[in-house]
Length: 154
Image 1 (tube, rainbow, N blue to C red):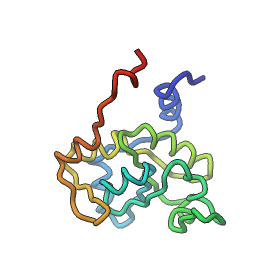
Image 2 (image 1 turned 90 degrees about the vertical axis):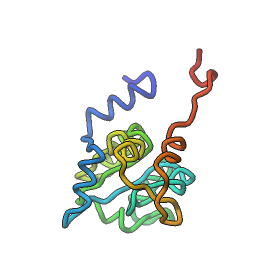
Image 3 (image 1 turned 135 degrees about the horizontal axis):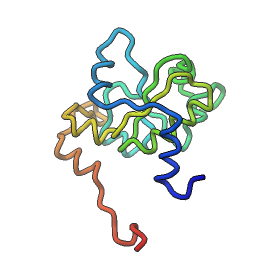
Image 4 (image 1 turned 60 degrees about the vertical axis):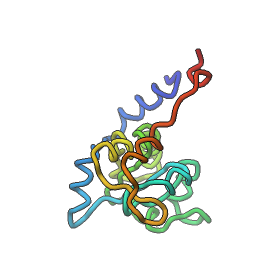
């Protein structure tokens, strides 16, 4: 049973598959690319995201994935049998979201291992809300916020 965030993510990773950024890049160039679902917060998505990603924040993911809600994203709700790659900053939240989507009946959902941070580390392009490419060095800083001493709980 989970005792903290890391153990909760570890449990999720036992239930789902992951894909590395460079492997995802190759899949995006195929005839049937996966559906990309970015589950980060709005400000994170607006600052930088992978081209073609659907924005479905984790806080309302379930209603984004299902029919009949004001948050329903039709492209996502009808993708239950398509390959879906869930994306977050580092691959932790996306692992949890991938488990949720599996519980909702999505048959082929995986998590982007290392998230957009890994995507940026692999020198792959990220876009901002104006669909302009983001400077990788700026992205590195944005994707690596400092943790305060108080947040470490020491």
